[in-house]
Amino acid sequence: MAQLRTLSTFAATAAVFMAAAPALAHGGEALTEQDIWLAWHLTPEVTGVVLFGALVYLRGALGRKQGTKGRRIARHLMFAFGLASLFLALQSPIDPMGERSFFAHQIQHLLLRMLGPMLIVLARPEGILIRGLPRFLRRRVVGPLMASRGMARIGSALIRPWTAFGLFVGSLYFWQIPQVHNLALRNAPVHYLMHITMILGGFVFFAMIFNRRDDATSAYHGKRVLLLFIAILSNIFLGALTTLKTVVLYTAYDIEGRLFAATPLNDESGGGYIIWVPASMMCIVAIIILMRVWDDAENRRLSRRYEWTGSNTAALEFPQTAEELRIKVDTPNRRVAQGLGMGVMTLFLLVVATAISIVYG
Image (tube, rainbow, N blue to C red):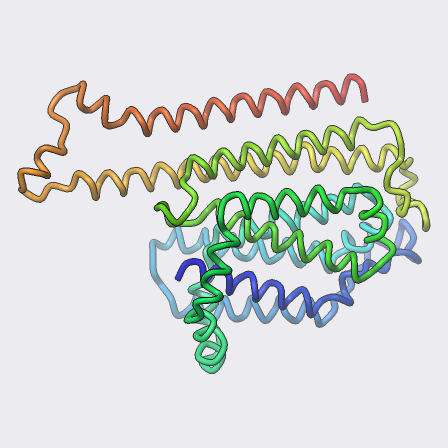
């Protein structure tokens, strides 16, 4: 069921942005540095669908009052900011800027690939969106999708740990290949495909990271933390490589001239820094959230395991001495310590790499 709901979210997202293909061409060639800040291209293919999604969510939220008030408000805010991130990436001046500035293009990719998907997944909007849909859509579209075994298998395959990680990191590295990146800037359908793969890669990855299940069919929390750390290291490697290079790689930005009188190397170094630091910091935020989720999952699991039932078996599960208690909590504590140790090491590498870029950049 969880995989089907996740897959239905992916399908809805894909439908939104497939319909928005004409809007994904920046159209910033003829804009000057003065008027580009006013280049809000509100197209019905994107703005209309975003508004429809917001209204569906609002309709579903008004009829659903599960959970505490504070948690409900937090979920609503995360969904709103996530949806706004996708909207700004595609309809605001960031979009046309991305055709003539590598730096602006990487900010757009950060919104599409990381911030928007992460916030929407954290909001867990599947139930609210389904409830807010018209009844005939729930019965004729969503119901058959959720009952389909084939769709369930596809959903399960997509959110396997290494599959989701490969799609997430691959959607970054592949489109940063200079020849591929330059082609995407010159070809609207290829550019459209770039954004689609980044959006879906982000949704798949964060759906796996924040999956509420913690059993043999899902990625255990320790593995999810490990994958986030590897994602940080991949950001550091690619970002440092792009920031510290001494040759211009992305020449398609020079066809119409780079914005704001930026030299090609400075523009590309700034874009590399976006990959390097802000994207890595977002993964660190995800790790902090995941550690809290992990702690809650451990508490629930221990509560179920050691719940007092009055039976002899239940009595044997309760630690009677300090040594027995130490043995029972040793493994969870070791996992947390390893995760924190990896976090400190990653932060140290991030700081050192940033210092090197400042000194030798």
